Image (cartoon, rainbow, N blue to C red; front, side, top):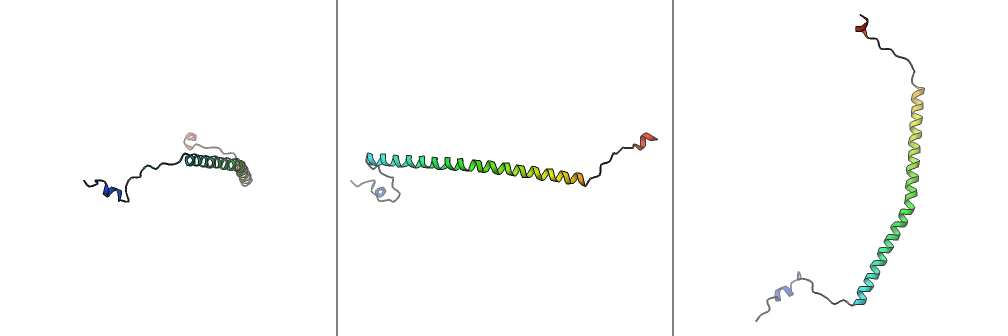
Length: 95
């Protein structure tokens, strides 16, 4: 009797077979993965702690600059305008 799975065994697209991995390799892999996770967390937390005050200071500085520019533009506008009183005359009412 011939082997019905012979063509599948020689195919490059065959399914992966189960391999026995030693338990110490699993433990070492888990420790390395955990250390990488903790390291990435500490790196991101330290970057956050450094960048947060910088961003807050930048936003406050920009806000101060915008308010100062608006204040100066309103002062210049008041210096260039002439204050007057206006009265609306209704022509139809006077007839």
